[in-house]
Structure formats: C-alpha cells, structure tokens
Length: 592
Image (cartoon, rainbow, N blue to C red; front, side):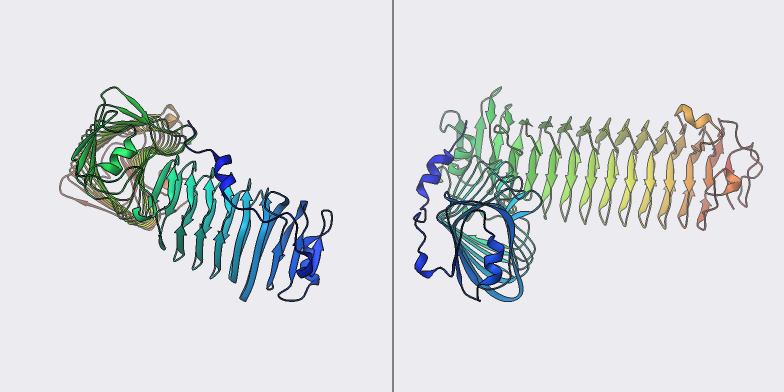
C-alpha cells in the first residue's frame, strides 16, 4: 500500500508563476528554438527565459547565467543539462523540468560550478542530479522523482544543500560518497526502492526529514538525526506488533534503547526497516519487502548490539539485508531475495548463528570494506551466485558451517580479505569450492571441500593459503590449483578422488590432485594424495601434458607424504622430474 500520495506532496511545492518576467530577459526561447544557441549568444551573467512548452536537446553551460522557465510543470526540457567549468561560475536554474536523460544524470554539475536550483524537477532519467568535482549545489522547492537510479548524488568534494525537496520513486533517493557533503532540511524522501538516504562516505548533516515507504530510510553511514521517527521514543523495554503499535518501524522508534520488539509467531509483515540503536527483534515471523522495494532491512553504522532472532527475511526485489553496524542474527532464515541475501560493509561486525542463507538471486553473503563476519552452525546454500563473496579488507570466519550447491563458487575471497574456515564443508557448488585471489589470505582447518563442479580450491595471484587437517575430494576438476605468485602450505591433509568429471578421462584434459602454475610455491607435509584422475601432483609443463611450459615456482616436501593410486585416466607415463617419488607407479608426480 502506498504510504504517501505523490500527487498530494507535489501540490505542497510552490510553482513559479506561468508569466515569465520578460523585462529582465536577455532572450526568451520558444519551443522549437535552441536553448544552447541562446546560451552561447548571451553575455556572462545574463538571464535566459524559457517559454512554456517542451524543448528537446542536451544543454551545456560553461559561464555564469540564469535559466528561468515558466514553472516546472509548464516548461519541460526533454534531454539533459551539464554545468561545468574548472573555475568558478554561478548558475541559477528556476522553474522547469528536465526529463528523459537515458545515459546519465538529468543535471550534472561539476568542476567549480556554484549552482542554485528552485522549482526544478528532475525526473524519468537514468539519474536525477549528479554533483561532482568541487561543485556547490543549493536546492529549494524542487523534486527529484522516478529516476532509474539515484534521485540525487554528491561525490568527490561536492557540496549539496537540499531544502523543501521531494525525493521519491527512485532507486536510491540520495547518495553521498567520497568526501562530499550533504545538508538536508525540511525534505521528504519517500517510496525509493532501495534507500531513502545512503551515505557511503563523506558527511551528511541537517534536520529531521520525512521518510516513509522506502526500501529502508537510512543506509550506510547516514545519521539517524536526519530522519523523523514514526513514533516518539519511550521508556518501554518491550513492545509487541501488532498490539502496542501497528508497524515494526514504529515499535523500533518507540522502544527504549536495548529493548525488544516482539513479533507475532507465524505472522507476515511487509516492512522496510531502519535500525540505528540497540534493539532486539524477536519472533518466528516473516519480514517481506514492501511492494516493488529492493531491501527489507538496513542496519546503519551507528547501530550497536542489535539482535535479530527467529525471523525469516524474504521477498525483496533486491538485497534482503544491508548491514553496516554491529549485530547478531540467530535462528534466522534469509531466503528468496532477488539479489544478495545479505550485504555487509563499512566496519560492520556481524555474527550469524544457526542461520540459513539460501535461494537468493545472486550471492548469499557479500562482504566488503572492513567488515568482520562470523558464521557458526549455519548454512549458505542454493544461491544463484557465489555462496559468499568477501573482498577489500574484510574478515570472515566460518565455524561448523556449510556452503553448498550455490550457482557459482562456494566462496570467492579477493583483494585483501581474510578467511578462516574450521570444521566446515564446501560441497557441491557448481563452480570452484573456494577461490583465493589478489592478496587474499585463508586458513583452513578440519575443513572438507567436496564434489564441487570445477576445482576444489584455487589460490592465485599473490594469495596465501594454509591448509591443515582437511580433505579436498571428488571435485570435478583439480583438487587444488595454485598459480601466479601464490603460496600454499598443506599439512595433514587428504587430496583424493579429484577429476570426477567424465571429461577428465580424456587425454586432452588434465584433472589432478594438485596443480602448480607460474611462480607459485607449495609446501606439502604429512599429507595424502591419492586416486586422482591424472597426476597426483603436477607442474604446468609440456612433459606433464600441459600445452606449454609455464612453471618457475617450487614444490617442497616435508615429513611423510603418501602419493598413490593416481593416474586413473591411464594417460601418463613415468614420474618425471627431480623429487622423492620417481620410483612410484606411472602418473603420480610430474615436476621439473
């Protein structure tokens, strides 16, 4: 159900009178004439007036001037406007609509431009307003509605001030990033599909604003002070929904910090929730997104000691949850959201216990920036993308967890992310079980990587892996592939039965227990490598069946290693190279 009438809100915004004051106009442009030609012709600081009607063109402004229409309903530009110069210019845009920009912002303000907008509408475009560079944009009595992506975005070192603005029916209402600054006052952010206000970095200040009906009102580092609560905070430590209050967001707003919002067991709630204070949400209930919304719940960076217990989160046309704060999710199910099940970013600290993340349309769990995530006694399964993707400087730990039957990789760990796996299983994922790339690091102990649709484990680029007391078995291609300048240490581990795909029996396919490529370094200690389709251990050399020579790394052996019953394909002869296993039956080890 729509929470606001957009038409009613538009009626509250003042319109410039339809008669354009011709006495101050250097030129008045009529429909069918060129706005750009008029801008090019007039002198610096001139006023260009636009008559009522529709214009179709893209306009670029590189000097100080004013453009005044007959009112945002009467004067319409079908196209886009770009205001940019590397030195200061001052531009005023008043009383017209810009719509229909298909490949960029309806209005882009860049360089050192200083721009004021009044009674301006930016609508039905790829995005509404983009303020970038060192631009300064001041907006009053304007509306940014029905854009495909952002209603307004401030990035780089831009400064954006919004007063009495309507930001509605976009993907994100307002986005702030880099070192940009936003001041937001007396405005309404409503029915945006993802976030009303999303602050990725930079600074957002101002006064409380009306926010309703968004996927979530506040996201990322957006401060709670910019949102008017739906209910005044009380001293109540427990509130029920329904019962004490009609909506979960009202109860979150009203409950005392550290209090509990109790949901009715078995109930289904349509919700777009923002959590910014310590609170527990408890009950065997289902939270589903508002119609057409692309988020169910946002935990902002301010949030501490949040607990979500027993809840199912489902039905988002985008992500299920967006988490930037500190939270414990236990006994929860996050399922059947169209994009990621959970996205965790910023400096979030999140624990999952006894939780299932399944059947989401992309990754089950996406972790980035400096977030820290622990999954204990939990499962991540049947998501269409990766089970878990971790990147940047994030840290993720799995304890007695299972990542299985996902549409791509079980885990993809990249950039400088760190992974710890203990007593966990990566099983039956359609691509690789685990990929470590870039400068990622991982420690695996008592972990099973089984029956994945490509390689069991891939370690590449500059990544580092330490594997102890684990099993890599029955993966379709290689058990372990190490390449680039990656380093892997393997201790007390079994690598067996890999190359389970039927194609691995062909002479033109190589499906081995352990494959080392490029400048990679591998240390194998007190481990077992057996019953793999091709070599037990091979380097990427023609003598081993590779199509070209590409190996300059090292393989070292410590302790007692057992290498036996490999070469199930029967495609290999001898055990070429200098190593301790030359006297074994054919096809066990191939090294330089």
